[in-house]
Length: 177
Image (cartoon, rainbow, N blue to C red; front, side, top):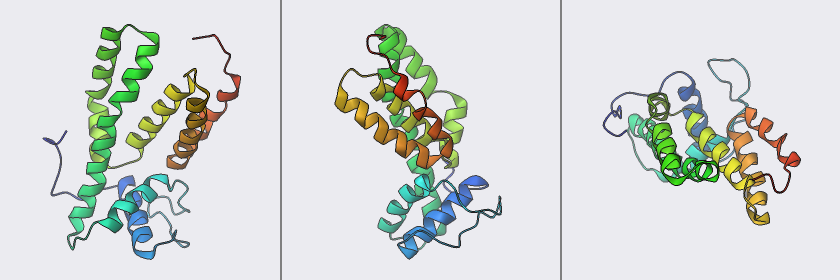
């Protein structure tokens, strides 16, 4: 992933909206009240990813505009790389170990996942949080199930479509797995 990393290009399209929101949040220290996405001309509904980015923007002390874009992309790459762990653990619940490892490898080397991780959009944290939430929810430990709801809340903050995962959670039947 780092081989294809575009160090000299700014983020574009939706990623630019997330960048500017995170930048405003890092500078102001509070959520921007008058922020409008330049692409949708509406209020910014998903502020989980920009809030996470703003922490790293605030820590970073750079005068280069592209450094902040690279931080956004680099975090996307790191999160997409860490996605292999919950994918493997989730696949291991249903498949034998070698097949679970193969399925995780096929997922992590997917060209679309690699491309989306380099864009700096919400897709990589959305996948990571969703898969982690599913894995924890399918656990037999009560504490893990509670963490699944916490992560599902973060999942919904990254993209509001994540609220849909909360619908099947109460219908879990013991003994299915």
